[in-house]
Image (tube, rainbow, N blue to C red):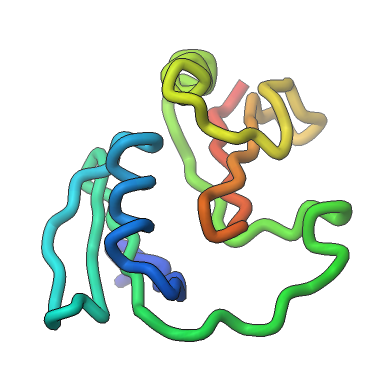
Length: 122
């Protein structure tokens, strides 16, 4: 039985990525490994994201136009989280909206260019 899945994202700058996820997205660093760090884990509301210091795969030039998501995060209150992130100056790739698939969601572009969708059942 699957209990939880944690994505592993590549980054070239673990300290910068941690600073972004803590200051902008409200995650807490659970630990780093190596000096300088080559691996880190952050969490919010008992949900974790892992980061590995490595060259990311080649970028897709249509990633943003096609809104190719890196992760979809299921949340309880899209309006509240959107307001929190807006107050923190988070860059949105798509603003808060009701979607045809019965979700109220928005998309964040993180400091490494990943697209993270946050959605709540509507």
